[in-house]
Image (cartoon, rainbow, N blue to C red; front, side, top):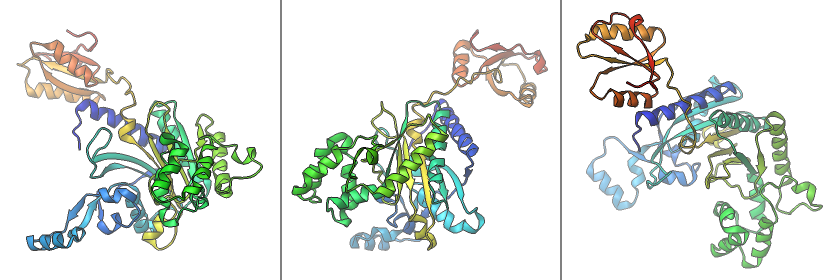
Length: 420
């Protein structure tokens, strides 16, 4: 959990403003949910490994004996009834189940808020971080996925990020793949974790690890490696190029992805969308298309998402289609450049010691009413250092205020590049 200095905070707020503005322009509405949820929801099996990282909140009224009994029995979970949210998707599902009658049939939401995970602190891994999610609930058609992809691509472009591409796959294709290798259904998620490593360990490495884990029979390893090695990660011509469709390829799912690709190409031809057979995404709640933002020069994704049609039904009792896309804000904010905002509408008034408080605030108020951002700074011996700090904080002009200054019209503003 981190502190942010003014310059860092300004950069983050700039990025958040761009994200909010662009998502809103694409028809999404922002909501807010509490930072805490019932522990039973956070540990309902929908959050994958992230559930293990949830911060629990102790029940009120516990005494030392109750804590000791729970510790002795190994039932520490009974001590908590609430927890800090570890993502924004579980709270959204609960939110929709609670407010469905008040929401449109197809609900398009923005959630931008901090989440908490009990991570081991390291570079790029924080215990508190911001997530930026857009979700569409109530639309089972590919249109929803296309909207998410194009809105996210537009947001990344508005942030000035270039050279990105979006990888896409389908959970049904992954499911059919591991079934073809005769991997037990209960081992499905463990097998996918290994498949996700293919870019790093290669197809042979994936097959070898599956055998080592006891998930794949050694006799099936060569065929499994061949299935993976035979596909490029932009294999859109898969059905066209082969007379026989691979036995593991779920044809309807693949054609659904092609439909999404064609729609994105028509609506946003500058957005590169590629089929990646080894894209997995870690959350177990995904049910259909999944996607991820990739930059060729970075070894990590910048965001991702997918369809999770089964989650809301867990809270509502009725299945509702849903799909979402999340930007990795903490990673993206380090990559963007903040436009120079040291404009003349941000000014510093450097005042003499004998200028009275009333006169200073009157001049300041006059300038604020004209739309200026105003900072008062008492003149020091090292005025150059004072003005340099002001410039670093985004101020673009300054003026000296004396005891004789009675009105803002008497001020002579100079660009902060002309430092005195």
